Structure formats: C-alpha cells, structure tokens
Image 1 (tube, rainbow, N blue to C red):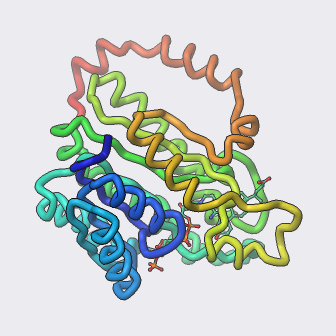
Image 2: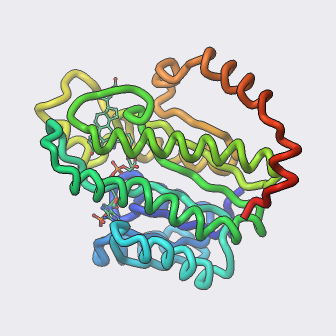
Length: 265
Ligand SMILES: NC(=O)C1=CN([C@@H]2O[C@H](COP(=O)(O)OP(=O)(O)OC[C@H]3O[C@@H](n4cnc5c(N)ncnc54)[C@H](OP(=O)(O)O)[C@@H]3O)[C@@H](O)[C@H]2O)C=CC1
Ligand SMILES: C[C@H](CCC(=O)O)[C@H]1CC[C@H]2[C@@H]3C(=O)C[C@@H]4C[C@H](O)CC[C@]4(C)[C@H]3CC[C@]12C
C-alpha cells in the first residue's frame, strides 16, 4: 500500500524511527528522514536505498527550533513533490527524575515533544489535503496513565492525545479526508529506553522495536484512529464511559452553525 508514497519520518536516526524508515524502504516508499545526528542519518538513508526505497533524503536539525520543524516539511514537500504521510516520532532524551522546579527544562521538552509536532502538522496539512494523506503520532501509555519520574515527558504525551484526538474530530466534522493515527506504545527495546530504565523499572520485558515499527506503519496505512502495541496495553486504555460521554457532548454542538461560520484552514 505504501509503494511510491511520500513519507516524512522524524526521530529516524535510531530506535523505532529508524526501524520505521527501513520497513517503508522495503515497501518502496519515498523517504525524508530527520533527527539531529547527521552521521547516523546518512547511514540510515544509505541502508534505505539498499532496501529498496524509491528515494531517500535526510534533513538534520533540532526540533527545539520550531522554524526548523516547519522547514523540514516544506523542504521535504519540494524534494518529494508532495506528501502522503507524516510520521511524528522524535522525543527529547528522557531523564527519569523527580520534578526539581526547573520550568525551563519542561518548556524545552514541550517544544521538542509537543510544539514541534503541531508545527509540522500545521505545515503539512495543505499538502495532505491534496493527497488525502495521513498523520501518524507516536505516543505512549505514559500519555494515558500516570507514572512517576517522567512528569515532563508525560505532560507532552497527554497534550498530544488531547490535541490530535480533538483535531481528528474536527477533520471529520469538516469532511477533510486526512487520517490521524495515535500510536500508544508500552515498553519497547530501543537502546535509549532500555538504558534509561535499567535499575529503575524491573520485571518487565520490552517488546521488539522492529515489530512495533510494522504496527505503527500498518495503523497509518489502514487509517486507524488509534493503535496500541503491545496489544496487552489495550485494556489500560479501555474507557467506555469516556467514549459515551464524548458522543453525548458532540450531540450538544450545533455543527451546522459552526461549519457555516468557519472554514478549516
Ligand atoms: N522505547 C519505548 O519504550 C517507548 C517509546 N515510545 C515512543 O516512541 C517514539 C520513539 O522512541 P524511541 O525510539 O525509544 O526513542 P529513541 O531515543 O531511540 O530515538 C529518539 C529519536 O529522536 C531524535 N531526537 C532526539 N532529540 C531530538 C531533537 N532535539 N530534535 C530532533 N530529533 C531529536 C533522536 O535522534 P538524535 O539524537 O540524532 O537527534 C532519535 O532519532 C517516541 O515518541 C517515544 O515517546 C513510547 C512508549 C515506549
Ligand atoms: C513502565 C511502563 C511499562 C509498564 C508495562 O507494564 O509494560 C513503560 C511503558 C512506556 C514507558 C515509557 C515511555 O513511554 C518511553 C520512555 C522511553 C525512554 O527512553 C525511557 C523512559 C520512558 C518514559 C518509558 C518509562 C517506562 C514506561 C512508562
């Protein structure tokens, strides 16, 4: 399904993002990958070309810089001649620690893990409208449930859930055919996650990043609203009362009035 499709993958120098890039390459997609470390990105795109990518480019830089975040989308659109799928996956390195009052560091994490996602989405929407494309947002069970020592990370993941779940409903109301897939992940065996959890979280076995990447791509290609990996975490997300309440809240909205007075930009 993804042969010849034009895809951006963020945080693709290592971990789950790197595996997503390799799977897309095997499927024959056009790729633009991004992260900070140029040397790693060069290796990733050369591997992607070996695996069968229709084309592969990299754009290095930090998502702390929101101008860079916007430029990645416009440059990628020019390089590939449009965009079919935006996979938002990068995160700032995680430090498991008690909140120490450092607000500036929380702001930095919010820029990288949240505002850059919104910036890229906003820049990509016009291109995705043309292609009836897809946005895939990689999130975590830590954006659904509460765990200690990761207040900054968790805040950003909850924010992503709120923003993209709301945007999903807006697109539906405005009959805009762009899909949004929210990916809720449990513990995955990337080097960074295994290292930062070592000695802190015990007795859980991480799931493989390769299979995780396939499930993320599948969710995006099938235009699913939400996927959970490993599937055992579905149960923690099951909240029928919330679903019913959301349905009834929507019924109270005068949709005709809103859509008449507002254009989706
Ligand atoms: N692994 C896990 O257990 C879980 C992961 N997830 C989610 O999956 C996604 C991927 O996680 P994972 O693969 O483990 O993460 P990794 O730490 O392995 O990779 C993170 C990626 O983001 C890039 N990155 C880091 N800082 C920046 C920055 N300032 N600007 C741009 N890019 C940056 C890194 O590259 P570079 O350093 O070169 O910039 C790297 O490519 C994340 O969204 C995470 O929240 C969710 C639940 C569990
Ligand atoms: C402990 C949780 C798993 C519980 C289970 O029964 O499976 C982990 C599930 C998701 C993890 C966090 C996450 O979203 C990824 C981050 C990756 C970093 O590199 C390490 C810390 C994480 C915040 C990680 C912490 C443990 C989980 C909440």
